[in-house]
Image: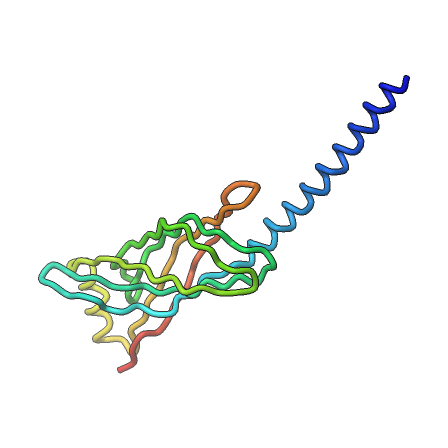
Length: 157
């Protein structure tokens, strides 16, 4: 009878502990959904006969009270609605709680991919970049996929 009572008490305590841990994990997961990635700049690093290299800079903002660990980021870069490059960051990046971090990602492009975007820039009022992609954060509940959709004006003429 005493063994059964101890067993029930042990089971009850396990359920209470697991519920508490599960609730904390769920709260952390929910808080990390607020991490945002803002396109800050696209700079030309190198040009050659076939294309060149750019650096795409994002500002990662983490308003939550939990440190964020980004496992991977992948994105498409558009120039005036024409896809010009694909970028990927596979380094593990820490984004501090209630903090931010700049992410500088090198990407290569080919002139054949940039042509349509540049032609449109000569007839349009502005030249702008758009980025579409995903960032993947490491969480206790598995990877958290965050959508990135940013647009920024580059030049006016």
